Length: 116
Length: 109
Image 1 (tube, rainbow over the protein chains, first blue to last red):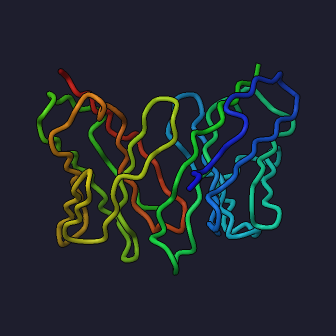
Image 2: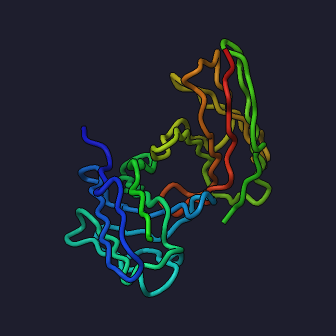
């Protein structure tokens, strides 16, 4: 069974440009989460989808970040325009329906974003 | 969100048992305790999860006292490949996790 997949693994862009990160969760997982680690600090939550709906987006830093999950499958996280402080590693995780599975969050390898 | 406190770092020799304790005084009734392992340039990898008492799987054991205000991850006979950062997370698995600083474990030959 394929795990959580994230694309690209590394992205280098200039300040002011737009970048879109993609996450493909484990097939059948209703829950999808975005986290990020900025500048060597702790991993912090960004938002949580249940299928295509945003369950919790309290961690989104500002309106330059837009997350979507079309059809409840893969998700994209767009940063527009990117700023220097957005550099870091963005992790995606997925978990099955809490009533059907153990609720374990499985993480992808992350996308390393470098804003120059 | 229940925050956790873990030692920043630990060293151990190969073959020894390693116990990493985590404090979570504000744990809520429906919170679970989940431990993850992370290697450099990789995402966190699930190790073990529990609610109370003791849980054991093929890689680790998790001890949770009755008051659930702390937990201990036990890694039996560690090897060099166990060198990683270990995170203790508290929360309901379907909600967001709070990642603290984690414990950086170094296994020495």
